[in-house]
Length: 339
Ligand code: AHG
Ligand code: MN
Ligand code: MN
Image (cartoon, rainbow, N blue to C red; front, side):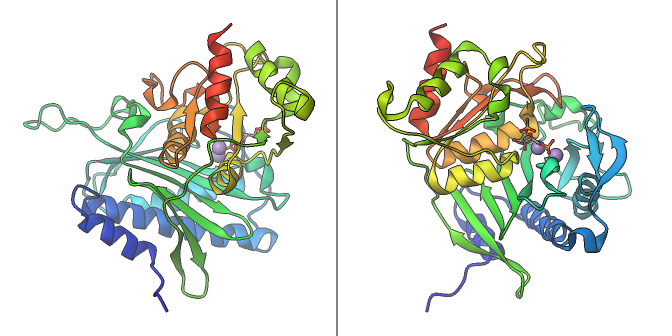
């Protein structure tokens, strides 16, 4: 019988493999995984743990915070602030970056997270998750160490050194990339550890499944309307095949389905708020998901550009997202070019 490979063993092996992850990054990822385990426990308790419902506050994006948004944010901060591997953290639930307090040693990594993705699904017992992205603080002049600032975070997604998510669903699954493909780890609750359950995840280039919030159809731009209209025309239309639709309203669960069996996910710009580039956030939602998708052979664009090439100007900036099976993403992107 082959022995089970824990997340720890996987990371140690990645550390040993030449050119892969340094020990500090391994520690960081283990700490993030431990935090996800605690969040998973809280999610599982639900009403019994008093974690459902709203907290009565708003985040920087003007969204009502749920109790679990705040709990998950605190769990991630408490787990990560003392280990010495981080320079600072940034979160959907915090207006500003959080530099590591002076009482702890600081490291060179920057951790960004959406502590609880899919907040509208918490109280209705539908899959939710945590999304994270890791960058390295760039130090142009090694003779002086500048205090960490928001500017340090404003790096394009292609500079990520690790990215992943943990989905809290029927199973708790941690999905990770350090630039060497995508691996999935399932939480073994009896052992209390994440066990490798899939390696070299790949997304089929073609699909017959799309994910979009159809209720926004009247607000979409022409290229998105055309793409979805053609899918809906099915075998009789220009695509010559029938399409199925899924929309979980937790990006983490929609992306997990796409990594598992293919598909295309769209949260495009729409006319509801024309000045906003989209709903989803670039730094801690779109970038980490785009890297996972690309590492699995898929593609991710904002309609005109590869998401990971976007140079961010703001920590909480939004972006239009089209990601998943390569041929579908390329088709939607090509429709944007024709306008
Ligand atoms: P969050 O809960 O972190 O604010 O993110 C919710 C996001 C994303 O997970 C999901 O795809 C989308 O919002 C759902 O939006 P609709 O409510 O428009 O369906
Ligand atoms: Mn989110
Ligand atoms: Mn969130």
